[in-house]
Image (cartoon, rainbow, N blue to C red; front, side):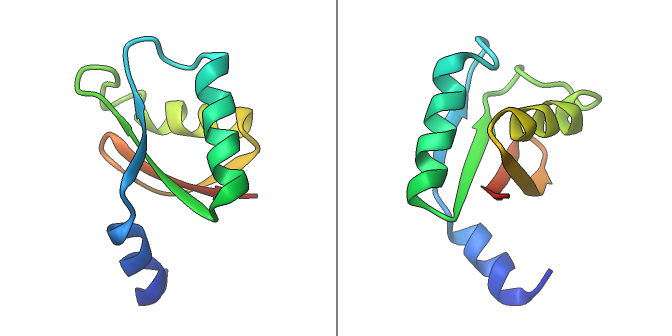
Length: 83
């Protein structure tokens, strides 16, 4: 990953928060809408929503449902981009 991309990801503001409701149609629609207007978006799962063992699977499942790609994931925060 190049330095420019890393800087861009760090500077992104979190635009989608995921609560205990998990993956709902409204969340999928919101992510798709945001990806239509931006190249990258940053998502954060609230504390207690994801445990360490399920994070990677959760982000990948969400990316699959939104036709996007996870380009970075650290803890409860992930950056998605268009496929």
